[in-house]
Image (cartoon, rainbow, N blue to C red; front, side, top):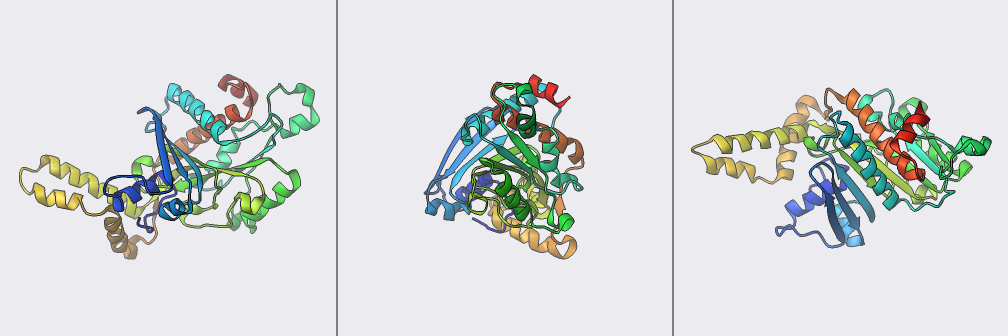
Length: 328
């Protein structure tokens, strides 16, 4: 696998291994994969079960769930509701909570930079209930769990490591689980703003833009950490790589001659092509990160999907209509 190709998605790390190291397209040893869903919502569950698999895929042992929703960026109400429900089921699958479990949701990122504001924006749509259960418990419906939330900002704004802030809060309120939401990076343009990843292995804030800070994990916080992320950016080399692939495909379809030459270009190893493009672009654009122009509306929409997936999963018997009434 080419470690220089920037991606936070385990699904893509798995794809890279199969492309570059396993000619028979087998799963690498120590990695189990299953898929479900349909063309609207495709779900891939990757489980890294051994140190060998961890080394091969470059990610810690644990469970990684990816929802690919190609039309997630669109304002389709039916798809929105179905995605919320599918996401809630996957949260329920990976969370092991009892009726009284306290949940801390952390919205990572910089609320002043839209592609990095997914975490804070998600919290604005979240049913926060810990204070209600503490002060007015008789007014709260059955099945509602104590949920609290924090958007700690970023080191450049606060001067404090995000991990230090979260650790202090965890030590004080002692939640049973921490759910951390952050923006990620992808190696393919079509997965930007269309893919949601859930992992039970924690997260390093800022990893989406290559700026890793103190990890949030069970080892650092003392409680399980569920990471939720959506790729909102790609780097310029990834965009150029995808564009070249599409141009080559078009030339192959249209060319009457020289098809062998175009097929040869198409079969160049993707990782090697990426590194070549990166070297060519470096003197001109440096480490350029790219995001779609409609990012403001899209991030708002995806934040609402993640928040409502959590709302349904964390509170028993809650529906989307109940959530809408609560947030009014």
